[in-house]
Image 1 (cartoon, one colour):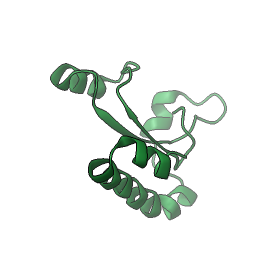
Image 2: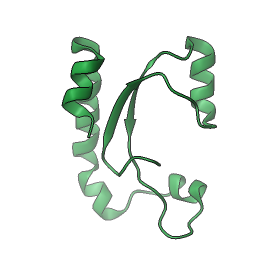
Image 3: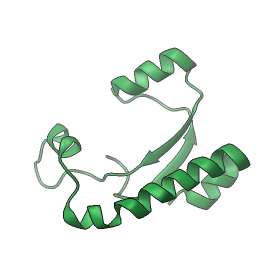
Length: 93
């Protein structure tokens, strides 16, 4: 939500911000695990956050989605093979 659509952010650790999946991962692995986050942007106007997160991508977003998913996969590969700092330098946008 706090990252523009298509932008990537790689980092180590961080809070769960009320996200149950992240709470579960933190409980299982501890707080210091690598994250590759893909931005979806903020809801327009007064749209409820839950409705925004669960809605389908727009036709414009779908046109770009394959590229962004490939880029995120490349970022994960870089993170694993070259480390966090190099991956952040190459992919944080």
